[in-house]
Image 1: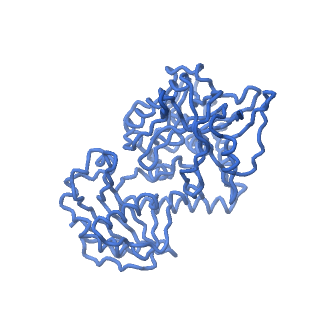
Image 2: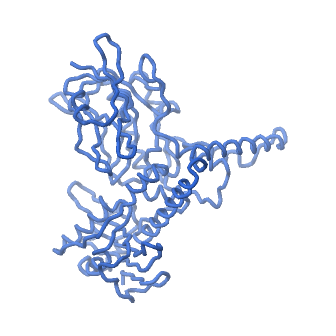
Length: 489
């Protein structure tokens, strides 16, 4: 049989034990594996369901359930689907259909607190679709804990994109298998690790901080390095010096290899310098420090100053395209500036973040020279995404509108949240009649106020960074505004 039930930790059987009754006090951590849609309008087909019931007071596993699911059409198990989770057509051909396991899934989930990584947007939606497909009402949770927004908010983006694979790699837990029960177990371990780190940091907030760890680790490393250099005979180099050099580097060379998900076994690589590199990467932002100057921000290039031959994609070897990935120009993260961009559409609040706040952006026309640079970046980033094994749909950076197909892009205006308040992550200026630019004192996010500045037809000078993303089967480049200078009509 394809279903496995375990009532006590450490025991399991091929359907030998009874499925737990609905409505218990346990937290149901669960995960689903699905097919990967191959065309527009094609939905997801459920291929596997796995859940672990956990006592909320002691975090003891009190039961589990897992089963493969045969889809109505085995043709949906495509090559892309197999690459994603390893579940083949042969594996599910003899599995029960969802109608045959629906009672068990319902009993495991209904009336309990649901928990999992990205379950609000993905896993719970797939469960509801599966029950709708057989004409039955879905199970309903007593509450829901989505560890993706929870850990992003509480733990911060120390692990890059905060996907389960990235978190597991961050804590040295090995590679994510993308199988339901294994992923649930990994989710529980990641949650425990994050909670422990936060507990320790809260106990000694003045000592256990990222900045102090970096400073002390670097001081120790420099002292050890100096001592080793004194002890080393002249002209003799360490046999693993090239390996150590690669470890020190935060970012590998341009993407050329196919699989970049390989994790490093911490048991075989415990150099102190690697600890420094890992801690420093926690502090990395997608953009370097910028200094205001009379002509704008330093470190930003105009389109005509960019050589496409010098553009490459670089990212840490343990990641796919994430916030720790970079589009580089001559070895430095590429940041661009362009003046006189005409606003086509003002502030768009259609999309929300995980906390329900609007993601702010404006649509602007771009000149031909900027369009050529961005099209080149879009092309190599898409190829890198495909080479890394991503199955996400690539979202083109440039959209063309109007009878003349004028190129346009979205400039995103990030917000920085502190407690219950939020401020803009973009410096916003207004150009005066004299030609001078005055920085606006905007103490809080006010969408109406922002919309009144970026009205259609206004001109904007933009300074922005290029950030790569790969999230929920969508990938692409996001232009993040660092500074905007508004020129009213």
